[in-house]
Image 1: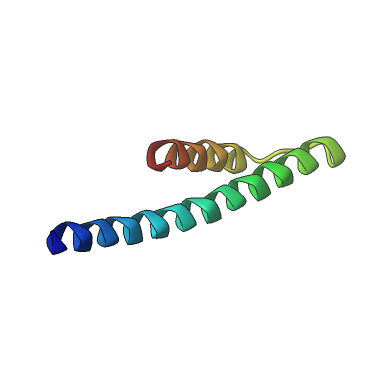
Image 2 (image 1 turned 180 degrees about the vertical axis):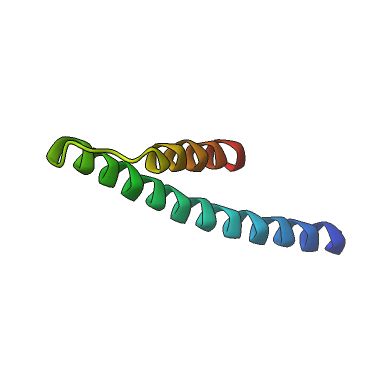
Length: 65
């Protein structure tokens, strides 16, 4: 029974770390999208790499989260 509790704590710790990591990646995605929107509407320009980065970050969040 103690082994199951230890395994449960270990899994909870991993879930906590993954959740925090995905939270930071989500914040990064929000900042990239915000930057892309500001560049597009205020400066009438956009970079392809920001759109690609948005898709990659979203894909990572979708697969992990």
